[in-house]
Length: 201
Image 1: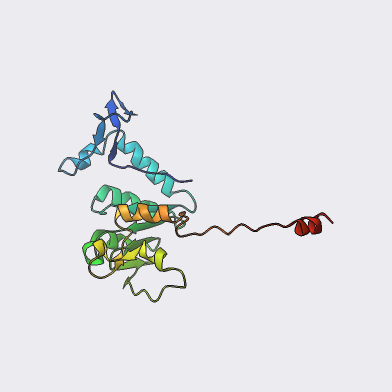
Image 2: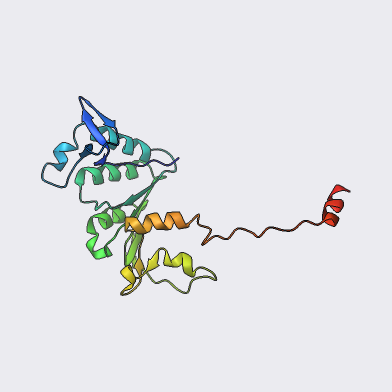
């Protein structure tokens, strides 16, 4: 099962009475914007329900949460993740971060405390509480195109970095994982009359 959590609202949402309607209209944009009122706004519906759903999801057995575009600087959300990871050792969070490890201190702090949280940033990672820089070797045969979808220079300049912290690169990686450009279908085999006769016997 795949769940998509938009913890700060979404375009196409509209507050109406005590609820939220997903209408898809252009004038509907029930969002929490980054400002000093952000915490207060998330303490009412629909956001409290979304956070409860997220916590319930993380308490399920063998749960994996991919976090992309979250800074881990919102204490109330980070505390929810920390509690859930502490209660459920079978849950895991993979945080794909855009910046270098040194700039992702909030995400790294949680990953150092919880071995079931990993941080993957542009220049390194924290996995099972251990911090390290990327040192990719030579790719296996026929892996050049696949590696280029997650490890390459940004904007074709500079040193290669881990790209999946960029939401556009992550979406491209997911799309290419089922692409016939990367995964080639087996070529059709011609069946002769002799083969059909041999199977029929």
